[in-house]
Image: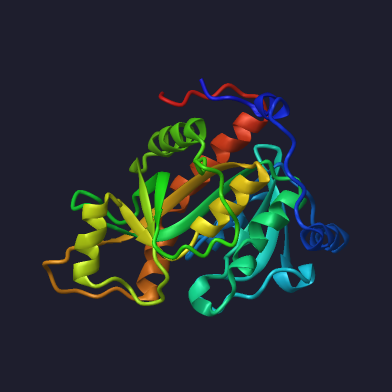
Length: 284
C-alpha cells in the first residue's frame, strides 16, 4: 500500500530553498499563480499535459526573475498550475540544459522554485532514448537510479540519491492501469546536444543503463538535497539499434513524447490521489 500526504507530515521539514527561489515564488503568486504540494517538470514534448489541469493558470517564466529561458525544441518556458483530482499542482513546462551553455547552478533553479512554492513531492519527466531491444517508443521507464557521465550537478547529493521506491511502484502500476507500457530502469545522463554514436550505445548498455538522456539528474540531486520525494518518468522516444542505420531528430522526439501523455497523466493522477489521502496500491 502506497502512502499518503500523512506520511509526508511525518517526514523532516524541507530544507530552505535559496532566497532567490523564495522571492521568485512570491512573484509567481503575485502574478496570479498558486502554490502546490506536488511539483512537476515536463520535459521535451510533454508540455501539453499542463492543458489537462483543472482551474489552470499559466505564466511566462520571465515573471519569476529566476528561471532562464530554454533554447531547446519542445520547451515552452512557462510556469503553470492548477488542480488534479482537487489537489493543487505546480508545473514547469520545460527546463534548461547544460548543453545550452547554462551553469550547473541554473539547472537547479526549477526544482528550487517548486520547493519554494510548497512542493514536497516532485515528478520529473524527460524524453529519452531506449537502450533495450525489447523497448517500444512511447513506453515509460520509471527510474530507480542513474549513471552520471557529466558530473556537474553543483550540489553534493546524499550518499544515496533517493529515487523514492514507493512512488516508483505507484508510477509503474498507475501507468499500466492506464493501458500504457511501463517498467523500472536506470538512466544514463550525458551532456549532449548530439545523440549518441553506435559505439556509445553499446557502452551504455554494458554499463547497465536502460535509457539515455541529457537532463534530469541535476534536478534529482537538487530535490534530494532539499529533502523532496522524487519520482522520475522517462518517455522512450526511440530505441537504439546500433547495428542498423537510422537517425533521430528533435522533432521526432517531441512527437513521440507527446504521444505518451496519457501515461504521465496517470502518474500525476496517482500522486494526487495519494496526496488526498486516497489509498493507492503500488502493485495492483
